[in-house]
Image (cartoon, rainbow, N blue to C red):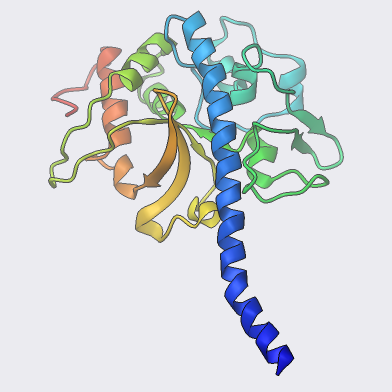
Length: 251
């Protein structure tokens, strides 16, 4: 009888403990994003409100860390810059370190989201490739526009699009997001696997926005469709850059 009662109690408590652990993980992750956001704000104040110009994802290598490209090497810097490298002079946190045994990057907060699976002996998989667990959303626009026209993008133009974002209704009557995320929890395939965001149509992740706020962001596959927020951001950036072939109204 005692064993049965204990088993029932364990069955009741385990889900609650799991939710408490998930909540604690989200709090740490949000604190990391706020810290990065503060350093990003200092960066922007020093660069006329520009956002760092870099790809959304690019595998970091030790050789690049030891021999960075020249400042005027635009494509080289796109391939070199990661979030820690872009903000290294603006944040009071240790830089990620190369782990020769695991052949990946290892380091401390704020670069790693605690939900990015890994251990001290084995760097988290997402972090081990990109030096950070956080996905740089404006980099998707940078990569997209460069792919379309090999145009060198200024960080000031990138900042203008993100700061000037205004939500509009899509063609199906659904509103787009009220703010564009700058940073989000990164995951190679399924953000919901980190933070229980739900099914395929409602994946969720913590996100940092341009006003410095950090909140839960629902990642909707529609955001990258022709009626979605990221598509509109890409279109607006292309129009700011006067790229040929971009017609019509992005809204």
